[in-house]
Image 1 (cartoon, helix red, strand yellow):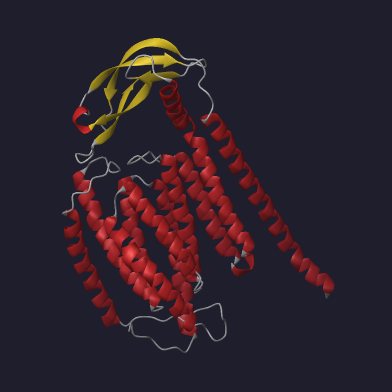
Image 2: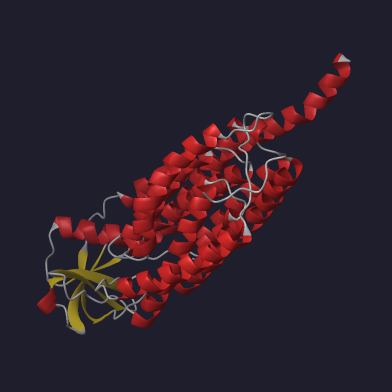
Length: 404
């Protein structure tokens, strides 16, 4: 008997050992990339010498907001770029004469005047190095988030099935690959590295949260609070999707707390880790659809009337209006989803499908390709969760419940 138990435990030990090795490797590579990148970024430019004058042209993709007192204007030519902070009234120059200086290693730095001081030289040199080292920092961020995913699966391995582990780590690995292939550009004065890190954190926390929901675990709401904070940060950084941000702040954060309490009060009698779930009646579904349509029209009209600009969408007003109405609809479906989750209704999975489809369209329009991986995770796990909840409802005596 002891021999059989030992044989059964041996594969688990091997899998766990492999997971530990992978986790250590990911963490080590990530830390090494951070350290080497930081050392490179802060290296001294050394002695520079004058290399001549050059004409540089304004990059029209970086428009200055009319409400801004000071604008960051980018001028470029074939050999490099120059970023200048200018008052709004002086930001319309299409071309300027720049002065080029060369470092000992051959890096060309551009300035708007002769004889720049040491601080200006170091700042210009650091900007160039930051662009060159962006792939390294993006990779370090991606591997750090992936290592966090492995750590969660390792620490709470008993709680997850083999399929759930494979699904979670597959989505995270795909997100890491996409983040390296399609790095984010800077927006609204925030570097693309920080924006991509927010995207990866959003993916990690969201798929973990949804996986816990599919397992009928009340602990999903603890993870959901971190999800809401991350998504509020993304909206503020990119200056877009304000309807969703307001709903997140005023609805999702409070509903997460009271939902945790509600789910705790309705634990399954046979399995304490499970929460009892149920489904809606037909007439209730019709009322929800009507409410979503009214919310979309009202909030979309209201938000489109606000004078909020962002360089994230390239100044395309038609695209901004389309995003506003899609965002209004997604926020309405999100509210319905939050109520369904609070009342433990199976229909929350249908809301997940709709919300994931809407957000996938917005991600494509905005070029946020790494977040499409999150939507792939939504679609696959939503199917998994719907099947699990449906099976639970069929096999338990609890009758179909009302929304209220």
